[in-house]
Amino acid sequence: MDELIGLIPAAGKGVRLGLPYPKELYPVIRDDHYKPIAQFVLENLVASGVRHVVVVINETKHQLIGYFGDGSRFGCNLTYVVQERREGEAESTSPGLSHALDAAYHVVRGRTVCFGMADTIMTPVDIFRIVLGGLESGVDAALGLFEVPRPEKVGMVRLDSEDQVLEIHDKPQATDLRYGWGLMTWRPAFTEHLHACLHERGVFDFADILNTGLRRGMRYRGVRVENGSYSDLGTFDEIMELERLHRAP
Image (cartoon, rainbow, N blue to C red):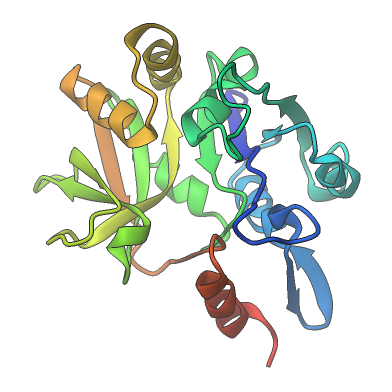
């Protein structure tokens, strides 16, 4: 457990939603208590035994620091990494997931990483502990899998009969696949693979990075979270669904 580190990318600007605050602070209210959406994944990590979490932010996300502080109120230590804008991206509202994850390379390298998105709500609360169980000997990464109703919104995963990952199909319009991934855990070898893809191999899309790893002989295990749930906040439709599922009646 001492080698575990959490990783939450929160560097996007959330322009699609047009909120007057970071979308990671979108309020979910239960039993008359406010909780920002990003707190859910943090609680998932802490409940799974993670005590050090890295949050990747951009230069505008002061409100996240103001709310979460040093992490002590949530049972962990928080480290904030500011993702620098890369040359040629002056017009981009989001530098991309892969670069956000790699921005924390100097902190997470050599550790077992538990990665979840800041705009997701997942159950059970110790879901990372479940997915960590897939990191048996010889496995480089374990993907937490959910049956999803809208495959065009997520990365769909093809498995063999032993739940080894064969291929990632990112947001397909039509597919015979049932499971999409919602969180990941990985060993230091995958951190190095991600870093090399971005800085040496010219591979930038995260799904392509996953598939490149498979072609290079890396092993990923799919962990089906059969009794779990997964919701994310990325569009207004998803906000409305979140309201229906998670707000008090």
